[in-house]
Image (cartoon, rainbow over all chains, first blue to last red; front, side):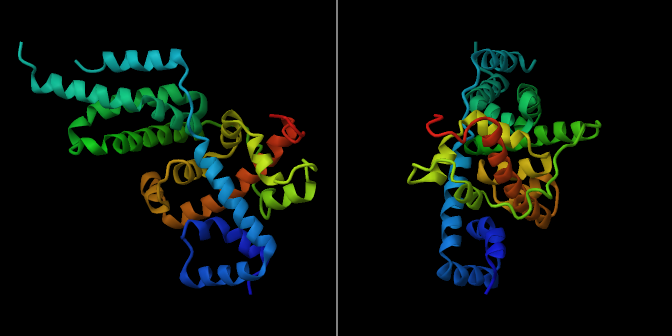
Length: 76
Length: 196
């Protein structure tokens, strides 16, 4: 069976489905027996969701006004 | 006066870009930080030059995003050519597990969900600061895949590097991001109960 550190190293690739068939099977065997790595997995899911939700940003009004101004001036 | 084809196209172009400006700016902020506004300006100019290549108006948002990523990438490459002090050592992040670190340090002893409370202590500005402190080679794939939803394969094409390189940068970037989150929380007082 793979070690916890190997499992943790592969966690995000496992969630991204970029691991091969054998590696996926090794991960699943490990996760079936290791409570701590299940915790790592749950946290990885939460952290990825958190990261995905962090991108939205309100554009400062002055920046938006300048960008819109440039857009209107573009072209002949 | 009849509306000409060219003026209609220009209006369509402006409507598309106007609609996408907030998204483009937000993405540029995490890719190039303070150069975001310039990167979006570059993107608008390039997009207008190549607007005739956009055949499917429904794909306009994704098309603009790709152009923006390329503009940001160009800016980062230009920046990389200028000598800059490097204080990032990714060996420190090797083997780091944020999950274990939080469990071990237990920063919120009265919490039933210490890991989630740790995450909720971060504002979007905090997350962006952590990302911007990462080396470009880690930050860009991380943002494109985990914030923008690109596949690793698409990211490799966009950045013109082999898929294996993207996968390895994602792996190391993830560790560096986790380590960066912990270090940032420590130095910015986010490890105190009830900080938010």
